[in-house]
Amino acid sequence: MALRLDPSSEVAYRARMAELYLADAEGAYSRNDFRGTVASSQLAAENAAKAVVAVYRVPSWSRDPSHELREVLSQVPERLRPLLEELASIAETLAPEHGRATYGEPTRGLTPWDIYGRSDAERALSYARRAVEIMRIALKELGAPQPPADPPCRTR
Image (cartoon, rainbow, N blue to C red; front, side):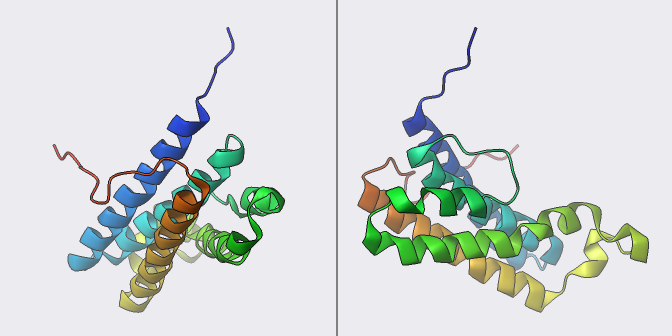
């Protein structure tokens, strides 16, 4: 039995994930949880890039989808290419933070909470906001499904 994926549902899923991780990053920042801000910002950017990739093909499970986004650029309307190159750069910049925000720097004896300060969180959050903004623009221009402007989020 082969697994079949509906591309439009993958686009909507990834876009919703990007929106929810951005909201999570905003919440973490408001609590001065700088590690959490960076971790969720990275995931927001990753999923924003994957939402655009999913318009054209199934994205991989890589933490750095920048190469996949760059591979589909030739299929994207030319007017969107500079924006999507910017999105690829953001995803590429934040990708290494997934491991650091999860595992720290063990060889240096640093936990993830030891690594990040306010300026790191602000930088990552700024990137995540821009990544999600670019995703929204691109998906609208491409006529792809988009998540609600204010996605619902359940908490336990």
